[in-house]
Image (cartoon, rainbow, N blue to C red; front, side, top):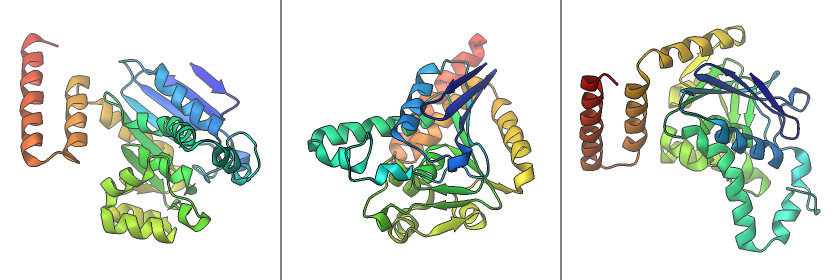
Length: 257
């Protein structure tokens, strides 16, 4: 099954328990617009209980080079900085919240999301990769959050996800300098789970997806939920979460579910 959303340049392909979401604007290095984020948000509405893995990709030689340059206009075009600046503050914040929803669902309970990153992952592209649970980089991949150099801030869920992955100090340095992080460094600091040659990307993604699907859905989902909660829970809270999850899993195993 294939569904294409021309206005957002987002394509989805479903193969059993795996949903692949592809940014499909290769001639513009998969530059993103508000239509892209709306299309991503709509993908979340298509999820059902049978989807276990979501793979996020970019068509062509780049994962995503970030915002479409037209959005930096101070004029009144749709989605531009000028349009946001002209809105009442509360309305502008609500607009950005709707954009963030296109990213935050990638850590929804019940799914594991995997970003397959080649070439540039800049700005909104970097934040889309960071929004996923896991990331495979090609050797030529570079991740960069240059918003501060443009007088802006990362606002598409990137700051919390980056701090969770690399810690406060590294996240602060990366965001305040806007420098590029190459694939080998991304692996060393915990952003990339795996780095492979470009020609091996498809195979590496397929191998990871197969490994993620191998355990039972119930155990996998319960474990993923525990790992996510462990990032922010204190030890007592996390110990309780483990107890609750394990009692439920034992009951399910005994009952044959």
